[in-house]
Image (cartoon, rainbow, N blue to C red; front, top):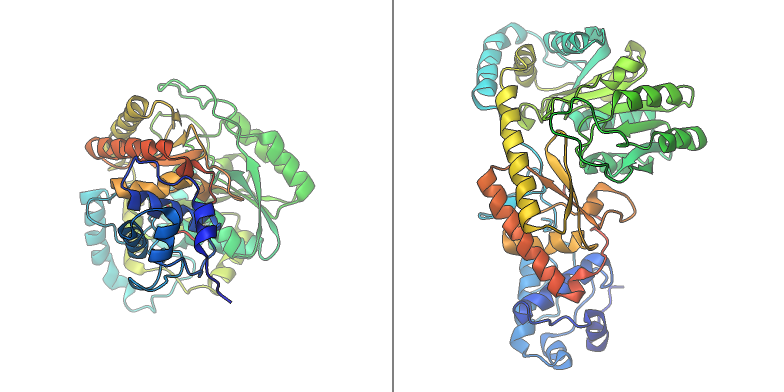
Amino acid sequence: MPGSLNPTAMVRLLGPWNTGHAPAYRELADVVRLLVMDGRIPLDVALPSERALAASLGVSRTTVTAAYASLREQGFLSGGQGSRGRTGIPHRTVPVSGPGLAIPEGILDLAYASLPATGEVVHRAFADALIDLPALLPGFGYDAVGLPPLREAIADRYTAAGIPTTAAQILVTSGAQHALNIILKTLAGRQQKVLVEHPSYPNALDAIRTSGSRTVPVPMPPAAEPASGDSAEPASGGWDIDAMVATMRHQRPAMAYLVPDFHNPTGRIMSNLQRRRLVREAAGTGTVLVVDETLRELNLDYVSTSPLAAFSPAVVTIGSLSKSHWAGLRTGWIRAEEELISRFVQTRTTMDLGGPVVEQLAAARLLRAFTEPLDARLAELRRNREALLGLLAEHLPAWHVERPRGGLTAWCRLPTPSSTALTVVAPDFGVRLAAGPRFGVGGAFEHFMRVPYTLAPAQLETAVLALRDAQARIDASPQLRRTLKAPKEAAAVA
């Protein structure tokens, strides 16, 4: 049965909450919020009455009333003023923003690393798709494999990259996440193991957990010395290949989910030497290598590598137009050997019967002229990246930032294990964040924060100044510096 918290226990949990660095009601609300998220105040527990808590804390009832009102507004407390509210986690998650969630005016979203459409190019592709559409209208509109023109365009791009591919080796999906869900359901399933890099892409970790599979994290090594911006070779040491291969041999995971191209969240890229060795030594372990290449085209430093599939036909590759062109296309794909594609199609038909036709026609057009918008997009991202790195160095010098070679995000090591606390406090300063533990399992990465450089430099400056102020509040409050666990339920993070 749901219980209640007496004032004495509440005071003990709060500790020295009132530091004087912010209004008392705000400090009280912040600490209660973190205690709820950390599980030290359970969910669906009635907090002490305003009068009783004010007397126990030695503060005015107005302070407690304002703190409780703030918690109700944020969704951490139910009930109206005068009633004993019960604790909860808001459905509209405060710490993490995700696609489909409304962003309040004045809030800069640093939780969601994605870009707007490549403007005129995407618009024109959809206009051209409508010209192609009448030829398909006599059909039923269901195609579990994908429209032939799109599959052929995808196959041609792999062939041009040195990986001979036919349309029969391509399955079109409704985005990369859809592709991963199909692969998980086919290759892993309940209670089977899936190896992942640690940290890894949060939505992939969620998909693995939802599938019933067991995540097997392999830590990535600490950041190497920054590579020069004009180097065409990746820095060595980005992945612990020995640990990955040893895990495959001893734990026998059904598959490994890897992001070797501008890894999310670190921005690293795996060298060809590491790719070749990984594929060679993984052979015979029974682990299928599944590679997410959705960020591969965002190559800011002109790093020269071959796709992982170039080293073995057994590699399964996930691709998408979400990062290079527009997430609204909802078009992704799987490249694999024909026998596996047949199995993936069988799985896919238990989930849906095919993707939207117009989007696939538009995607085929975009793939045929893939590089047209890319140069401008990469130039913009380079400017944003340099702006962000400079701002972090100037305003948050205690943060150690791993310089990304490409992709959309920078991975930052914080001076204290305060990532979740920062995520909770930051909206008060106008910024939404994704806490470090969203990128790991078991509460890891409280010392880390992913910061996208998808915003313009002026917005990044506003965001970094807000981060600086939020960090200052945490540094000034012992209660906010605690190592916290991330919320068990969080919104999607791109």
